[in-house]
Image (cartoon, rainbow, N blue to C red; front, side, top):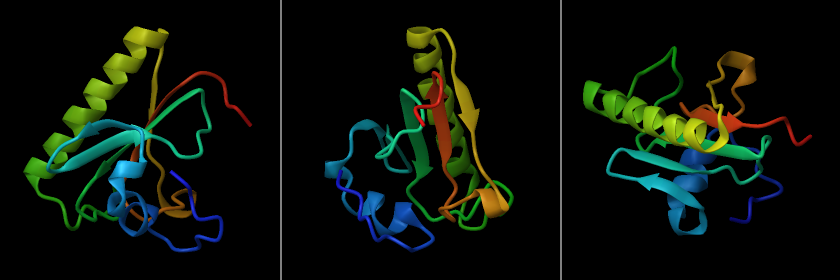
Length: 116
């Protein structure tokens, strides 16, 4: 997916990724959750799992209900298990506050040493 070089918004997922899912390398796509290979990976394996509804962050779950959160973490668990099985290790990370560039809950599932 071509990432807009000049994107300066604060919710890449609502503004870009979820608007054009067909341009992504999708790992999982369901009613509530999308998982795809990061458009600018930081690790050799770098998958982003994101709820399709806007949820600000792990510490601000407004916009989420129990079903959406259960679906989100079910997908995180499945994607992480697949990466762990295939690569021997996986990391699961979400960012908060200043560390969260995109103000939309998202979970990184990764494996390998940083690429940059």
